Length: 386
Image (cartoon, rainbow, N blue to C red; front, side):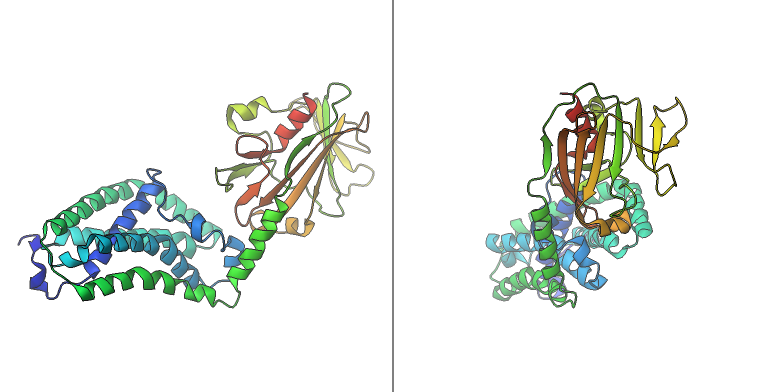
């Protein structure tokens, strides 16, 4: 049996043929963007991110969040192609012979891409989300093959329709535009009507983040009176009991958190060049009677021991604007403004102040001081090596 059949054999030509083609091409663009071959046609940062943050979405029912994501990030790009098809007059060529394998591949393609895009949202727990990420890595070759199949299917379908002489389909015109407009609009209705009012809450969070990010960055003032050979960390233990566990936060070009951690900075060659070295460091160790600080010699030169007072050359004092956020699990912490003040204890002069903001729950930060990264080590290095 031939893979090509006349549309008239299956009854009245349906505009769904163009909807299916548009969805298939949108799925192809989505796949290409995942492989960094093209920029996303309608990235979520353009439409969802400005008014829907991760924190505001936590109280939103999964189905409402899922509808909004599919409607804005997947169906809306397809709507753009539907409008292009309408302007090109393809709705008049629905009677072109139908290529069954092309239609099937297009349908399979956008269904798979829709399902893959929905999986991370459905897997709201950290363990489930990690499983989805690992599975996606193994399926990368299959996604590449699917992308190639979509290219062939879309090219075949377009070629067949463009060769067709065409006929006027007034109803098809209205139906195609309805498919282009109504699904994206209806997809956000549950979000708008959600009891938690995520749009208002998200707007508040975004405004707060923008306000916190004003005047962030490094301010270097006095110079050390002598070479700095030791460093002490400290903070107000009445405000927060432990120092945040990250010393650096790496961002992408859009300010989204890519990685974070503590200890020696690991930001490539530039980061290694700004890695300060000390003979010893000191920091609080809790409520140990008589010995509130711990003295840490250079690695592999001796065991840490308790001390009554600080003896380091300089002091790095950390403060935050919302210590209550630090009581939450790290990935659930909202926007916190950090202020790290470096003081030369020998002269009492402030060497510099570094202010930055980290919003872990929404995976964003501001106040970079080196190559798309927030680094306490780089700030300290710059302050003591001038």
